[in-house]
Image (cartoon, rainbow, N blue to C red; front, side):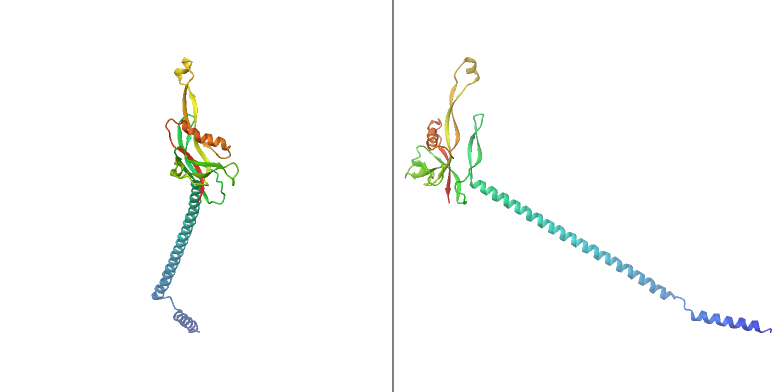
Amino acid sequence: MTFWPLRLFVFFSCTFLHQIRCFSWPSKALGRAGTGRFATSDNDDADKLLSKAELLRREIDDFEQRKRAEEEEEQRQIDEAKAEKQATRNRYSAVVPILKPDGNSQLERCDFKPRWQDGSSYITTIEANLPLGVILGESEQFAAATEVDEVGEDSNGFAAGLRVGDILHACTACKVEMEMPTWQLLAGGIGVPKTKTFMYQADGRPFEEIMEAIGSNRQDPENKPVLLVVERRD
């Protein structure tokens, strides 16, 4: 009876030691290996983030390049449309002196509606001294239009470059107006005649009136050439 508890103690002690031997604690090497796996995982996550950031940066760069290309193409189309519009205006317009209310003339670009609608004509200006030496007539092709029927050889019109078939749109004309200086108003004077040159619109005007407008340039005290705005075909 005395040895029974001792036997139980020895039995349980041996069993406990056996369990301790069978149980394996993590070694330092295992701990170091586990730490390495955690570090590798962190590095992989960082690389993935960097890759995603690089991909996002490239996508942003591509988007900005496409946007710039679209804006440049849009601006190019706008510039081409403006250039085409300006070229059309230059083709059917001319710079002529415009008489202002103060009596002075100022050069301005004026538009003229072409008679030919197929784009085969253009507007040009001719300066010629009187007499022109040309025969003008009413156009048989266009209503209320005056055109050059004949150009005399060695005439002023021929030397200036007028051609048969030119359609007259406008020309300079002269008119005499009475100017009343202040001192004459106080003295009860009748004023001083002064000749002014202006642009006469020939489109739709009677033929006789157009001829009078051209002939009125003889009243110019400076004897300047007649400015003719004509339309001609290429």
